[in-house]
Image (cartoon, rainbow, N blue to C red):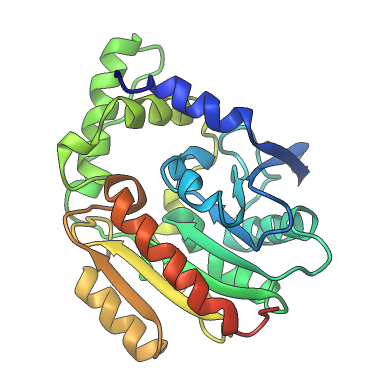
Length: 291
């Protein structure tokens, strides 16, 4: 039997989601949710220049057991652009205000944040301290983006380039930045990435290059988890340096490196990631703010 076409996979997920809209700039921030509303909420924040679909292989694994809520960050996907000027503080406040509507009544929730979503998550954790069970940081450059290596060799796609020529550049950028094994950049990855790039208006790298997350994690009370691919090329100074920083600054953090995966670990190593994440979420049930 032939595998489903990439767009069919995305359309099938979208067909069974429910949309939530919260204020954002001159329009709405779009949140999508799956699973029964009575289940424990898990909120997913995607990476820079992405959308909800960064979690395309995570959502189906969580859906039978959780209420899964995936955001399009301001200026990404189908969400409106944030009001200017915007920075980490204003973006985090906007997302936190949206969470008060998307997960109402002070219901406890877990936050799982990838890459740029993770950069904002320390500030969100402080704003939501009364009810956050856990924060799981996935592939986020906690000490800022590295200034060397393939993550800095991305090629800009000229406006108006024919799609087949643009696709070759996008594929090369994904191989440099997002995965360890170039074969992981399959048709599904290309389909969602090209759609996301066409919609992205938020320029997130200027914020991600700073130590926003390391600074904002100070004093966070909820349980902290980290999941990285052992081949993530975005980290300054490197994976060992991030592990050492978390061990010193936040003793007790559950820190996991998944072998054979790069930055987009939840996609490239979906089976391993989907086995690990529920274990970490279950451990957070006893954290501050847990019901």
